[in-house]
Length: 99
Image 1 (cartoon, rainbow, N blue to C red):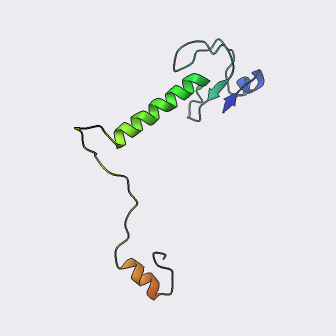
Image 2 (image 1 turned 180 degrees about the vertical axis):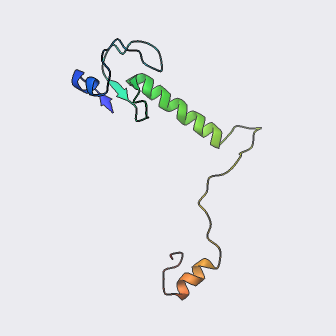
Image 3 (image 1 turned 90 degrees about the horizontal axis):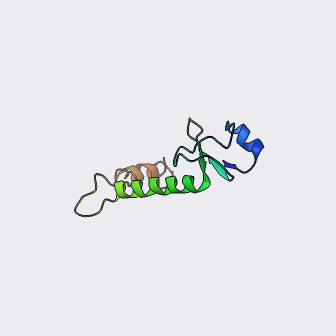
């Protein structure tokens, strides 16, 4: 959630702009701030939230698509239906691939 004024900051549970950002450990001195949707309801500077999100995306991409010489641990793909499953559906009057 984007926090741009004092009332939103107070609703987010941040009592003062002197509280520290969990990412950079500097005071939350000015708006805009970002409230995360995690269980802890953490508040970050907007720039820190963008940097954190970028770090997570880079880590996720590297995990799913590692650079050489490493190989992929697994590939994300939709599950394939058995070959005769679509024939059964069509014989019962349904559309191919639907149950």
